[in-house]
Image 1 (cartoon, helix red, strand yellow):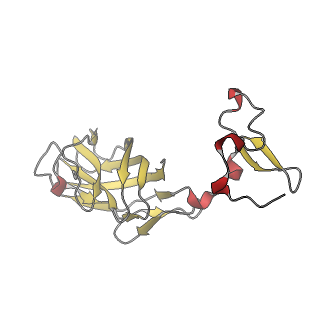
Image 2 (tube, rainbow, N blue to C red):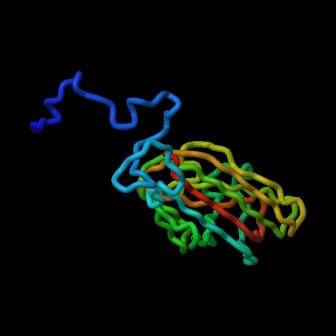
Image 3 (cartoon, helix red, strand yellow):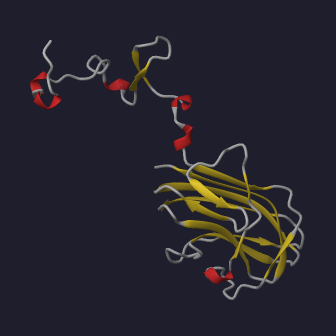
Length: 209
C-alpha cells in the first residue's frame, strides 16, 4: 500500500474509528481505550474511577480535629458581618495526609491556599464552634487575596451561639472560578467580643471544570 499523507485524504475516503461505525446513540459517553482483557487490542466502554489520572483531579482537603485552644475575636465594626476587615483568618488548618493535595499550594502558618490551575472549583465547608459569650452571632466567609468580599457583597454563613460554651454547627458550599495565583483563606467574624473555640472543621476544594 502506498504511503498517503493525512492531509491528502479526501472526505469521501474518511471513516469512523474502529468500534464507532457499528454503534448506536445508546453508546454515547463511551470511549475507545486499550482492552482491559487482551493486550494489543482496544475496546469501547465507559471509563471508571480507576481509569482516571488522579494526579489531575485537583483538590485539597484541610481539617481541624479536637482543638481546645481559643481565638480572641474583637467585636465587628459592622455587626451584620458583611465587612471584610472584621474577619479573622483561620490558621489552625492541617493538611490531609490521606487525600494528597494536587493543584494547590498550602501555607500551614497562615492558612493560605494558593490555586495552581485555572478552573471552576467547588468548595464544601463545615465546622463546629463555641463562644464564651452568650448570644454571639458568628459569621464564616472565604477571602480572595485578603478580601472577604472581593466580588462585592455576598452571602455569609451565620449562626447564633445562644448559650456560652454550647457548640454551634456551621456549614456551606458553593462554586466559583479561580485563576492560578489566587490565594484563598477562610475567616470568622463575630458581633460580640468573645473567645471562640473552633473545635472541629473540614474544608474540601475540588476542581470541577
